[in-house]
Length: 339
Image (cartoon, rainbow, N blue to C red):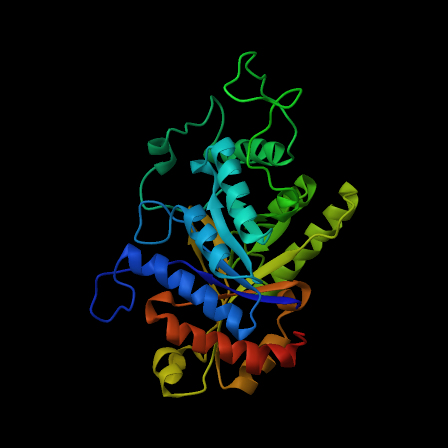
């Protein structure tokens, strides 16, 4: 394990017991939590993207704001649903956010998860082509996005431009060199991980896999990671890829922790059905510090990944989530080889 960051879904609800009651709360607290994470020595601030929900949605204003308020940590998404995205507009937004952060953007994308409305991407003006599924459309959007991130010119310039042009076809601006190598795909299966490697993207693996072979979640995820790395080597890419996994980790160090997560100490994997497919969900790691360390030491996927993302209960507030992160980075992670 080389890096540790947090992953926030950015929920909000107008409930008296929620510390995050509005969209403004979710956005501003996300920035504050990223600042706190950097001060604690963590390595990254990542945000989930959901549409038509009381959760974080349009990511690039938030990423740019976090990039402007921090100086060291990685700033990323996990993940953006590519069914909803205009690839060229997204490339401009991503380039701007990356330049503001000084090249710290880590852009997690994927086909996306079940959403709050039926075919929500259609409301954004995106319709699968004839014979194409929504997943196919997401991959088509991704291919175009990756292509334009490369920075090659492709648009014929106006012979009478408003401003002088460089020679040749024009590319999208602002262009951020190196961002193409910091794109990740959120893969839910072993086969998708192999496809990810073939495309030259880094691998993000979450707390669920949309397949189940009967083995523990972390074992199946470790196999997914190995298949990704084998496929990467077979594709002949020159750089070393990165792999992240997400975990819910709550060391119990005070009565607040015990009240919130004491009942999770016996957590186990769960198996269910997601969009008609049998899926396996990873467990929550909660308990006394030494028990959590011992449990995580046997997690094969955490050992195989280079980046660990801690899912945070953002509605419990910035101060409490900073406390959770401090417990992990100060008491748990060093015993697992972090730094």
